[in-house]
Image 1 (tube, rainbow, N blue to C red):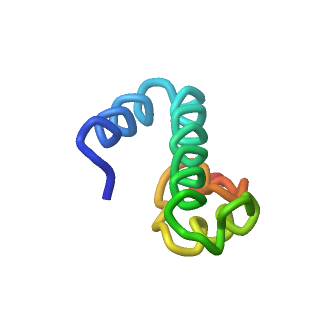
Image 2 (image 1 turned 30 degrees about the horizontal axis):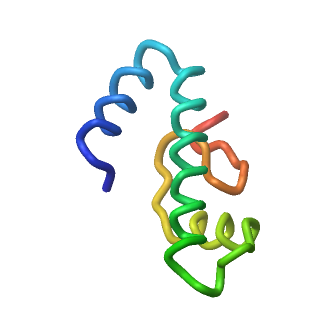
Length: 74
């Protein structure tokens, strides 16, 4: 799903530095939301709409979902 560099970050930081992984994933989510806002006209200028769309489309197995929920906690 992600490119090899991001998968490497998830593999390394997920094992040795979990708090840093959340920061990396939040930044990735932010970039994906901004990409969706540029790509789809119905989301142009609608940050919340893009966040909800991304949370529904993407498969979040580890880390932080774009809508603020944490996956795998508990």
